[in-house]
Image (tube, rainbow, N blue to C red; front, top):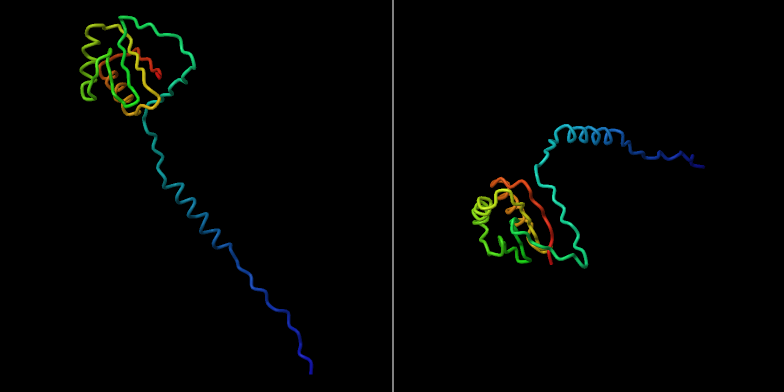
Length: 134
């Protein structure tokens, strides 16, 4: 006696409900996400030239240098991080129209640069230039 061959039922996985759930979760996450725009300073340090022209410092400038160890000097005087604002206020009082030049080393910590720029903003110095040094 011969057995009758029945076609085997092929098992199919229906992924439609899974896709529905994934799309609902995607919509949920998009709707519940809050977009926060943070405030910050847009600063791009200029690229250092191979042979920069020698800079002539005018006596009417306030020069702040930040070296590779993030040591801050105001007009060639070493300054503590907490005393930057006071030194800029004193320089601003003696030279009210003087521009501020911040010369930062490329390896210096960015926090030092931000500290100097914040202090200059509080003091009220409007003409600020940022440069890099060796």
